[in-house]
Structure formats: structure tokens, C-alpha cells
Image 1 (cartoon, rainbow, N blue to C red):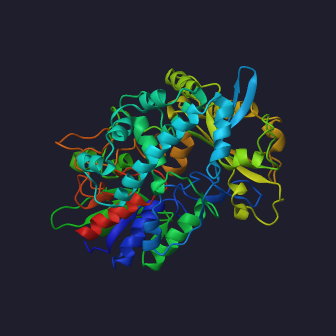
Image 2: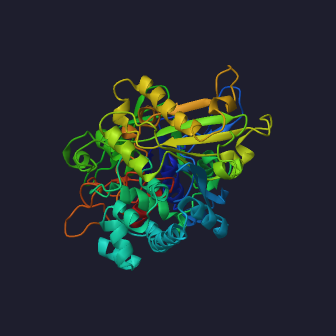
Image 3: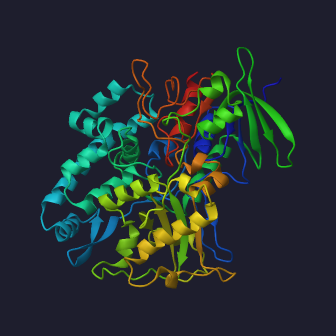
Length: 539
């Protein structure tokens, strides 16, 4: 068979676009095959509500892990806007109520907010010490993510802080949180970064929570989460343009149905259905898979060395997401019961709801027993406070988008009656939100051209149907620590077999992972795409 391309990339999500950009610029002939009618994967902006010109970041919505190096290498220009307010968490205690406000640009204001909650200076000092530690780890670990995969020992040497290494890489995160902090609300705010899309608890011996937490505090060497001006679609639009400028070809509406990994003296081959449903095949020296590892195993046939070697280790269970995504458009931001804070500050950062330490742990126990947590923890964020470019000129000035991300809501809860449970989960998170508002959220919702409230909800099973995320897992599988295991031991959450020099290799020599399921994957980062491209170019 004639080899038509040097590289075929399965899936046009942001990591596939990054890989295509690097490989095309290096002079390789690259083809990207995408099942949907557009590229971008989960990082897209869409008009979710009929007749309303509001381009929402429908799935992923903030950026932290995307290295500036990748943007520079590909001549990609996107505006990532820093948020002044890190978070706001309403609280009630002993007949008092208020809100913990973390203002990244005003240390005194933040200290006063901690003092109002706890009655002392101690907790804020502990907060500064803890995030000073994670900041130093971020500065040392983040640059390694676009370098050859270090061993555990090499990364530990690079971190150069035995206490930090123990807290983040070796012991359950809950031990550090309970030793460093005394306040239940403060502990909960910290723990939330360990639970994003991840069904776990503070003392999980598998350290699943530690791995999730690490990736949420090291982005850019600072841990900041920035607003993509124009929405996530602006990011992937720029990456796609860079890939096309480098010579990459794109076929959308084409579903890949099989991957033949090739062999000695024989190229790989990809089978796909074109937009008309006609089955076609194309040969390549390399196949880069931007889909989940379990999906690649299926494409390889689900058996044999190549297929079996790509099943992720997660206690023998299938990948599972644990989140609820709710997109809304409001006629106005709702008033808060806490009158001391400006609503623009409260909604401008991450607004934590029912996310104290005890509430997060209780929600985990309840969901583990197969029941819907009530209240269901969630966090919300208003993109349009930082960037109104996502709203068209006909959208009134006071209108705003609102994104809600529910935690501790695993896919298993939705398996019996998906529609009924989706509605019940929505009611649970909105009831918790209404509990901290001075007016019902429903009174603030805009309506679309059909007279329906501008509210869209996606469960883990919806994400699986929309984006082929297995079990709705936004990371494709359990996240892995960013190092290679030693002595033949496979690290918890690592892929079966040797992930290779770049953390993207599979048991099939010509087939590489370039998506979130690679080691050092997860989040809107482009890192797996970069690393897969480096693996190809290095050979």
C-alpha cells in the first residue's frame, strides 16, 4: 500500500492541533481526521441558546497548563487574561455569615477576609505558607512537562524539597491539609483542586486526589487559571490556523473506525468513514491518537499486544468522570445574601458553593453509596465579567454568562435513568446556589428565542455521547504523576508498559498517544500534542 502521509492524527482536539502544527512546520505531511463537523474537541465556543448571540465555552473554560513556549513555537497569538479575584466562598457560622474572598492583587484585603472567618491571623499565614510551597514546586515541575519524561528520582531531585515531595507525591493530600489548616471552609477551598472531574476523597490511598491537585496548581509555573479572551474557541481556532499554515490537512465529519499499527517494513493504516459514510483507508508512517487510551485500544482491535497495552490502570475499573457542567446566560448577576461583597468580585473568580471540607467528604460518601449528594458541591465562574467579546452587540449590557461545575457526581449515578438523574443533579446544585443568593437564580435567567430559560446541563454520560470521553472522564483516564516509574514498577495511574522517552509511546511502535490520556496529559495544555510531535521528530 502507498503511504499517503507521514502522520495521521486521530481527533482534532486542541492536542491534535498542537501536534499537527509542530509536525507540519517540520515539513511532514500531516492529515487530521475529526469525527465532528469542526475541530477543537472540548475546547470550543458555541451558541448554545437559539436566537441569542452568546458564544459560550461549552465544555472546558479556563486555561492554566498551556505553555507559552507552545504558543511562541507555533506563532499562535491568544489573549489569556489574568483574574484578579481567585475565589469567593460564602459561609455561615455561629449566627454569623460572610464570605471568604481571595484577592490575588490585595493581600491586606485577603488577610482581613480570613480574619473575619477564623478570628485570627493563623489560617492566612498557613495559606501563604502552603501556596508558597506549591508555587515553588510549580516553578520547578512545570518546565519539565515539555521535556523528556523524567524518572521519579530525577523529578524529586528537581523539586529539591523533601517535605513538599512527601506532601504532594507520597502521602494522601488530606494529611497535609489537616495538619496545616484548622478551618473547615479553608480546607475545603484547597481540596476542591483535587476533585475537579475526579471522584475521590482527601485520604484516598491511591493518591488520585494528589495527582489531580498537582496539575491544578502548577500551570505556567504559577498555578493561575486565566480567561481565554473570545472563549476557548479562540484558542483552538488559532491553533488550527497555525496547523493549516504549516501545511496540515483536515478532514472533518470523518470517523476513524480502525487502526492497523503496521509492523516491520509495513506502514500503519487508518480506516475511517468519510462524510458520506464511505469507508476509506489511508497509510502513514505514524499514527497519533488524540482519543482516549480505551478508545485507541478499541480501534486497534481491543486485543493483542498493542490493544491490551493501552488499557489504563485504575483498579481494574473503566474511566469515569465525576462532574456536572451547567452553562447559563443571565439578564443580571443575582444579589447575594452577603451584602459586604460586590457581586462582580464574588462571580469574577471561582465561587465555591457547598465546598467546605466536611461537605466535600460527605458528598463523596453519599455518592459512593449510589445516592445523589444534597447539597451537591459546585463552583461557578462568570466569563463575561472579564471578557464581553463572547457576547454579540445585540446582547444587553447587563447580561452575563455563568458556568457551573459540579463535583462528586460520578457517571455511575446517571446510569439508571440518565435524564431523571441529570434533572435531579441540576436541581441539587441550583438549590445550593440559591441558598447563598438573596433572590432565586431562576429570576435572573435570560430566555432564548423559543421562550425557554438559557440553561444547558451536561452530565458525564452526555460528555461521553458528545465527545467520546469514556465515562465522561474529562482527562480520558486517571491522571498520572509526571514521571517515569523506576525498577519496572508502574506508577499509579500510568499506562501499561513503558511510556517511553516522552510519555506518549504505546506497545505499537508506530502509534503514539497525543491526547489527555498520555502521561502529563489532562487539561487544556497542548503538552501531549507537543510531546508526541517531539517523539516523532526525535526518531
